Image (tube, rainbow, N blue to C red; front, side, top):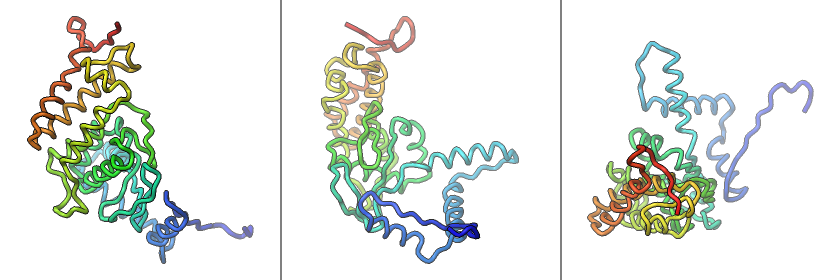
Length: 275
């Protein structure tokens, strides 16, 4: 660039599908808008999101900490589908959906199922519904619900099957889109996907189901996996109860008590077993 140039404006489009998708996304979001306008739009968007919780305090430091933390909760999941509704699925094929309920990505569920997703059910129910629709599309494409999904790929890098926690929590709170097929999810199919994912022969799930716990000789992280599986099983049972699926309810409620089998009643701690 000429030495006299002091500012350079660079625009970047992104798509997981193809270059044309990236071009369409870029035009849709920036066409006719300059840097100053785009900056103002971004600030306004964040103001709307962060204003979902109003904090009244004269302590500026505490307010800054709170809203910074709230901002961090909204960094992911991210929209994965293009403006034309196309996205790359877990089967690596290109699918097209109605963008009223976009496809999302970056579900670090072991990190988020305890607090972040329950927060979303309070301040962002529309996105919660879209997350569940995404889970079920991924189940159709990848044959299990996500554990730690990234850019349409299942990393399997954490334990548990905590997408069932997100689904059950939302369903128990009455979050299931509108009456339209495009915006709501099929709760019975969701329960079936939850049942299937909990029983896949991987990461000690079937041994856990048969024995009621995982031994240290069965799996690494045997105590942690036993506890995470037991909690997720309890979540499945709660959804089964609402749907009047008594057999599923009884089965998963029984499994959810498995934490007792790694609890040392004398010491008061969860402890691994071997042999």
